[in-house]
Image (cartoon, rainbow, N blue to C red; front, top):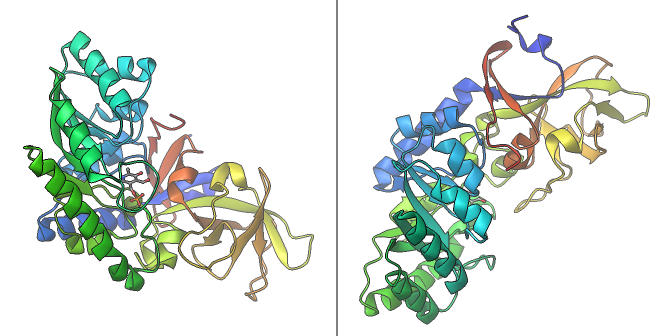
Length: 364
Ligand SMILES: Cc1ncc(COP(=O)(O)O)c(C=O)c1O
């Protein structure tokens, strides 16, 4: 039977409010165009080629992925893919080399081990691959911190017949404080980037691409000097964290988990059928807010605790008293992890279901 209304969906279910998603996509496309920045959205948030196609349609220069499987899936719609993750391991490299030849591929890496493996795989498959050397701009996750090491790694890219040095990449994921506090953190990133770029130029190389960008700092991208490409991912849907730090309005949250109230037996709370296996157990980062999600229509009501199939709604800040059988839409703290727990996204316009997309790269 064809599903036409949200009321007919089995819960928990992942919903995308299409009008909000489209507004989010349009806003970012406009902002990056005005700022003169290439937009290469990170598709790990939605893992859905149909949504990558929406991003490309709005002028994205290509897409970013975190895994080879995401690259395989996105190659159905994208001709230009950046794997922003060190591609270490023979199995991954082998699969990467089988991504259709028409796709212009680039990878980010920060070690000679990863570079050598990639160079060998590219040579044996006669496949040209672009390389971005990843630098640490303060996040302390991956990326080289020493400009001399960055320059040395960049120089050795040219030793590999099928590899081409394209530039530098960093992820400013450490900047996730409230947006009005973020400008204080950006000059340090600019200083570090200048050092890396100067070292690479002193080695006789031209870093054509300087790739940065994130959702928390998305609309401050113009204050990062030197960058010419950004890779926000979360912005397509936004989430409770993004709203809590002021990087979007609550009304920009396009993704929710539809859930049914299954128990009100314990006073002060209601239990819904969306637990950690539907919402994910992620804390808010960068702001002070309790719990693991909040109701779209009643943000005062938050998910205080989670079991696998139980979400405990805290009713201490509201007069609302839900009844068993009521349905709610929950905005999770971190949308990317929640999406990966579902196998389809239901496209909705208010109470109507207008379609669905398989989350083709989920779990990879
Ligand atoms: C390397 C890299 N680039 C870009 C992004 C996109 O960031 P956001 O989800 O904040 O938009 C991420 C997110 O994890 C990332 O790891």
